[in-house]
Length: 343
Image (cartoon, rainbow, N blue to C red; front, top):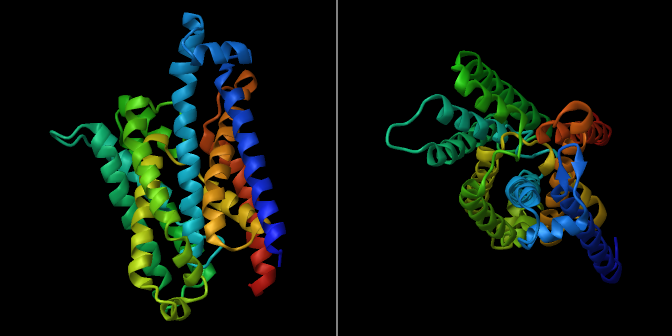
């Protein structure tokens, strides 16, 4: 166990390093201009509105909305992952692994495929994304509890993988039967990208993400109690059922807000909270706020790497990049878990 002084120093160091990484990759991402990069001076002038017309377009119209949305998506997914790991007392429970991201993507795909009369797509997408996201969470949770009140790690993960596979098959079917003008938009959800989010979409999604993050962080103390078990949490005065339902609804709202305009971006909620927990310990009052910065830095880093690769392979979808980093980490956690519990 770390003493209070060492823990405070570790927390400050982690926050500072995360902020520095976020700042560096923000500048690099803002400077991206196809096969070349703008100088830091040109980026700064463009941000202030004093750059050339071309530089202003590159920085303020092309790059800045993507980065702002990426910060919100990274923060939202990381905090949601930390909350779900605490709610289920399971380090493998994340929006992506449990199929929530897939459910939200299905909602967005349905909104694209079947236009709803008198409801604009910009409203139908987030609404259907939330409904399907929450429904997926309820289904996985119900399957996991079918054998009793306790939720085993292997059951939860297998239920999430199974439901996610089913949803992915449905999305693939929709992609197959979709008209050519809608097929590209649906394929977008399966790979994830920040590039199609403009200021209008950001204005709708970011307030929901911000409110959700605040609501989840305020429940950190209750999450600490719930990690001790439902009985201990109730002894400490926590209404476990009400708190769990509240957090799962808010988590679904945040995931839907992230996914409905960015597509499936996986493993952020797995990698970041777990790394923060390894460094700073199990206190959610620390994990959740630090995960906000770490998640934002991770997504912006992946976005820059995706664009940096454009000069060799074309721009990679950010969901591909987060999976290339997150999937090996997930395999490592599974192997570690196997040794701990003797699967």
